[in-house]
Length: 475
View: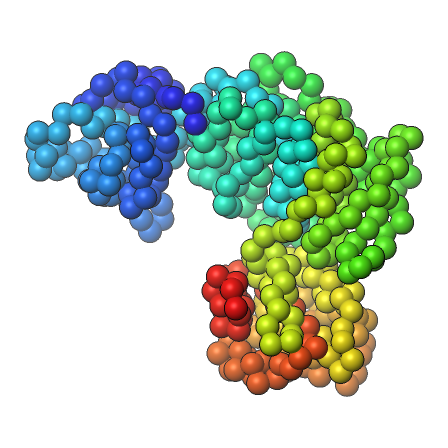
């Protein structure tokens, strides 16, 4: 984070300085009163169940140099209890969320580095990481930390940026109408990558056409005051992205398998347990090896190479850098224990990602006598079509040769119905709760088995991994 002075924050947020030095420089921002970096501003975010204003005193005790709050009474009570503290800067604003967003926008505009914004229904986090990996072959890259891709996380990310980096890669999420356009408008991006239009969040949008139009609001980050070339990098295999590619009027390129994709993959194969493919661009053909599970990651890798090429990174070096990418926690994360393998894919779930993960389970070679076991639960936020989407997953799973399904949930029973209609005799066990499911799975596992675990995060499905291989992934 570049230094930001109190007076800059006051100007951006239209806040009032209740006490402190307006020339005080800050080097960090936090919303957690328990973990306060050096020279940090604490922001009291007000949520549905938590009023962050109330933790101002705790933040100051933990070292905060300044606080941004929206409740004057909190300051008055703190000031009465600490009359001798004249150094802590306290800024009063009408709305702390709005104020920190405006502050982040101000800070971003002061920076010169270009930025890539990544969004999509499935695969945006992995694509973000792969883009950062490919760019890192020749550039110093800042990437979004943690799951900072929403109305609060993106501003906090922007406030971490500095001109020490050559480029930033930002994940921009979408949960409610208007959110993507808002956070993109703060980010000052010059390249937008859209991975696909799936079924995630249809509960809020109704149709994929509406969802697609919302995804294209990422271009609100293409501000006129940004002199750099603006480009959309779009999944050319997605019919909705093709349908609406001209919606915004900004230039675009396609990546994918279609013949007209500017960045294309061909000849996908398995070599030594890893996916290998040929990356094609103009007259160039480069073999690329991936170290992560899932054939769908070929598309993510092609998007990453397209972004690297757009920023002038040598594609051979970018491809070599991609080979080092190993993925991250709870996204097709492998764990070996006692001779069996568990694939933890419990970060979240949608129909597209669940089918992709089940395909991974199918593709992995199993030992003689070993079984493929799928542990599945409900996918959330799918709206009125949720039963049909679960049925669709079951219909897909029926043809994958999976030996045993273990299920817990309500809508997932539609997947069970589809499997039994298409593959009668398939062994499926349904459990009323995760506790008996985990106990049964523990008893069931034997050397050579491969287990795939998937459901939406809020179902608690991550407990399966935690109880079988440990909460930190260590055995």
